[in-house]
Image 1 (tube, chains in turn brown, purple):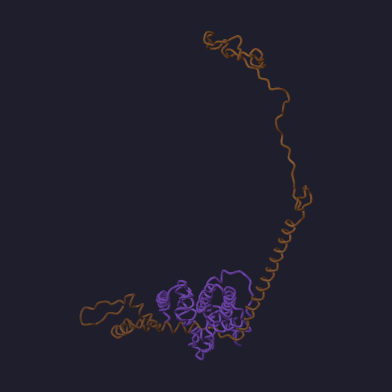
Image 2: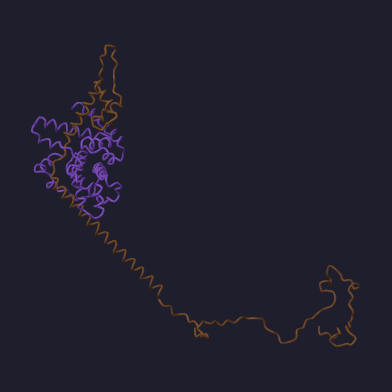
Length: 202
Length: 207
């Protein structure tokens, strides 16, 4: 770290990192154009900054000079690399074709299997076919439906007159005075047997 | 030393990198051969300066071109092929020592110059090329400094080392270095600055 001799008490100067970064870019030729003029003015007045620029340029020259590229037969290397790439390209193409053929074969087998299942004829069921007046046969089904048995004898219903059975010995009693039960009822004078309640079949 | 530039063998009227990439994806393998011719030197240079060994650098270069060819469809910006390829080269170089897979060997005898095989067998790094110098004293000093430089570079953090190698030594465009390091151009400048500071400190006795 150098000290400037200005006649006054020397003040140690250090290059700040921002200035050092600008000097690095200037050494590479990559400093933005709008910053070049100001930096060059600083380099003219600041010996330490100028010394740092010189160090960076020397370092650049050393690392470029002392790490050279091996001297090769570039035409032969290019031919070799081209052959290697061509070989890889051929191998990749063969694999692609094999894969494509395999997929097509699998798809064909699946289609054949599905087609066989769908289109195979079914012969176990028989369907009755009846001709229609138009001549088109139509399938007809005969169905028997079960129903009640019809009695051929007279309908007979037994009717009891009097207190219901539930009242016998039940919780309530039927007063004979309320329920009047005539022993016999004659509906009309011209007595017809069917009008005589004593003769009613029910 | 002649700088290794991506356009060193490129005809100004020739197709751009992006056009060559698109032609390759269209099935034109000769277009990829042109990309090989454009970038093989840069790939070898970057890998060599990271590994310090010619044979290793050639193996990595071969792997990088193979990998870039098989994954060319994944390149989103065809015009950025150079930086993308250098990213592959740097990643493969940094991972090379852990790799155990077998690979087709590069015929070193064919691709090296007349004296290259002998020198490559004798030395693993770049200092053997300094033996060609007419100044024997300078040659010796150069070899020693070259070894010190390689040791110092190996001590740098990864991105600083890559930035120094690609930008300062190989003079790759900063945008290509940014693409290779997957960072901004400003970040590349910062990595170069920090790496250079450390190298200056490590080599102060030899400069």
